[in-house]
Amino acid sequence: MLTDERATSDSSSPRVPSRRTIDSLARRMNGDRGRVLQFRDAFHACQVPMVLVDNGRRYLDANLAARLLFRLSLAELRVRQIDDLTPSADLPRMELLWAQMLSSGEVCGDSDVRFDDGSRIRVGFSALANVFPGQHLVVFAPARWPDEELGALETSAGIPSPGPLSAREREVLTLIAEGRSLPEIADLLTISLATVRTHAGNLYRKLGARNRPHAVALALQLGLIDQPGRRR
Image (cartoon, rainbow, N blue to C red; front, side, top):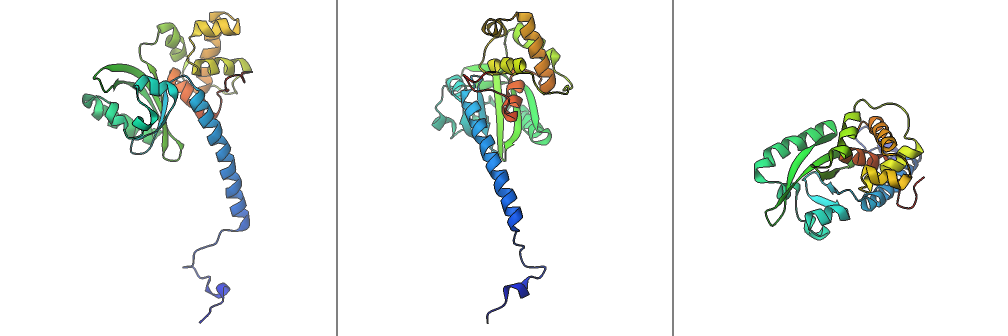
């Protein structure tokens, strides 16, 4: 027996989304697609090591800087987890940091990375949860970065101050993401080192960043990193 579809729309029947809802979702997905493309471009252009991992801590993607640091190809990384490159003694702490990231949305710290040949390197890192659903960003840099690089920047971090980044602050941020030192940035922009430190301190305050990896991670998530050749 055929039944009129309109006569069966009781509370147990699934609701069909309206055309307006479908159109709204489509526009949102299209906008997110643009952000994904921008994120991916900046991710792979960045010269600071960074990776994307899934909820199981498996590597999904790694930029060239990370692959060179790990001495592993992308294919080799994709069959591994963060756990595989973490010294066994550090695994309990890593579990706690992972839980903190998922709970609060971000975590910063330092940790050892263990390579296949048994060697290690200490890194400072920042991890942001769900930059895309189920995908988490980890940015890291050598923990023994010169004091002049991290000292002024880390002490400037705190409560984010209002206002967007200035054009010059974005230039400095882009160069930081390229792995440039503060003296190099001063030379490239033909400004004093003290001025670079001021700009860096300001942008760190505005982002609420605690260190260089944290600033790069936040800037990447917010789409603030300019592409090479497109600096303002």
